[in-house]
Amino acid sequence: MTDLNTLTLADARDKLRAKDISSEELTGACLKAAEASGALNAFVHHTPDVAMAQAKAADARIAGGDAPSMCGLPIGVKDLFCTKHVPGQAGSRILEGFLPEYESTITAKLFDAGTVMLGKLNMDEFAMGSSNETSVYGNAVNPWKVDDRQLTPGGSSGGSAAAVAADLCLAATGTDTGGSIRQPAAFTGTVGIKPTYGRCSRWGVVAFASSLDQAGPMTKTVRDAAIMLEAMSGFDPKDSTSADLPVPDFEAMLTGDIRGKKIGIPKEYHMDGMPAEIEALWADGRKMLEDAGAVMVDITLPHTKYALPAYYVIAPAEASSNLARYDGVRYGHRAKLDGGDGITEMYEKTRAEGFGHEVQRRVMIGTYVLSAGFYDAYYNRARRVRALIKKDFDDAFAAGIDAILTPATPSSAFGLGEMKNADPVQMYLNDVFTVTVNLAGLPGISVPTGLDKAGLPLGLQLIGRPWEEGDLLNTAYALEQAAGFVSKPAKWW
Amino acid sequence: MSIDLETAARVAKLARIRVEEEALPALAAEFNTILGFIEQLEEVDVEGVEPMTSVTPMALRRRDDVVTDGDQQDKILKTAPDAREGFFAVPKVVE
Image (cartoon, rainbow over all chains, first blue to last red; front, top):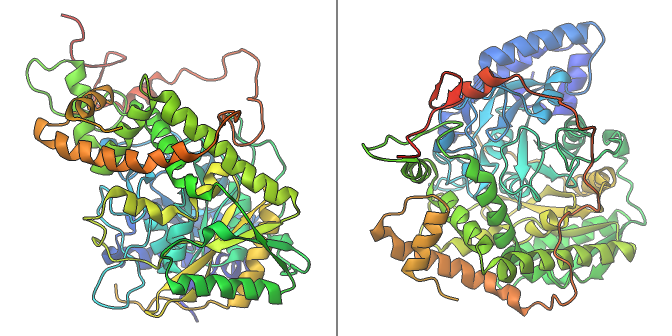
């Protein structure tokens, strides 16, 4: 029998319902794999007691015939989600010792559906990073390895991607502000979907940039993404931007039939200096969708070039405001004070000690672009450009485009530490293909479609119309079937 | 636009993050790299474009103006680094 931890959500669900396996067995197998995965540093808090109690309860529900899709399925939870009485630090020192007294809406929904939590997963500090190297817990490591180097699993949801790719859990939650689900998925040969802004509640998820943040599932297959996204989605009165819309049965929409669908290929995504392998992968994807009956259309998204600079105004501005709450008063870490220190010294010392370098830098950039005299020149201009970026997509969809195909990342996974001496803008370029989607609030999915010459996974991104995740998942499903990506990392950890 | 040491120090102060004097030149240089990147936005013609406030066209919901939550003082103070007698405790604010 295959190791149970290697199952997909769909297969495990079917086996649980058929009583071939129990959630206790399945959870036990995942806990064992997670415990033995220290070298990957993907799990940063293990919760075996919670997991076994949830597994027992799930088995009872399944026996009683009351089993939603996620019932009894063990997942990992990104450290950004607050889970009641389980440590959650958002990968930051400033939240050291923070034990949330409440449950995020998404984890509450998942647990109500019977999902089992194995533990919390590593991530870049406050989700700011593309390599998981800004985490207070240290780097998460990609299970994929082709030489002596340790590779990044991407970021910020690096622990989630590593854990899913290494079969430590069946799936994981992630969050995506500029590409933090899709880039790590592409780097690890897994599937990650960022839904439409407003589809998944932000309540109880530590905020980075509130107008861009969306949670989503990170899974082994597109079918699993459909199953888990449905369980995570839905209206929440506690999130003022949550959409009061019905959640479709996404899995039922996976027919694989995309005949006649119009898929756009945006010319602006041909970047200068893009590796030939990425170009080739993109061309392959185009061919695959065409062969499946889709109509490929060359389109233009003229403001693409300005997405990253607009993002690096808007996201830090919102972060500087959101992270003002970490002041040493209400949660987590407070610096040791010298005699005579007042409240200002307490704030300044606490935030200097508690925030890592990248977070400090972004908070200060955000402070600068919002400061008197620069608000119009930077922040308001960036919000105007954002409106134009969204209009580019609106125009494409108005012209009948159903989905847009692009590369997910400009390269395969790079080595940990290799970007250490690069300037910050070099690291930001990782998100060049994904960040437009956050600015426009659209759903986007990364699908593994091939290996590069070295043997590392590469992914393509599909971007969908707002609220049409079902249709997007179906196109992704067709791409997944055509690509037939089945490679797994060889176990070394 | 170029950020000098004085501006870098002012931004750090506004952000309430202590930055030691000797770290300011490197910080100012990083700011300049990032702002140089951001300045591409000046090329875009934004004449007549409204700054985006909401990515999905929606009005914020309203609800009845009634108390729906509260009475959680213990829970809220439990996560504080220093709480006494039902309050958050901080260093002396006024002399």
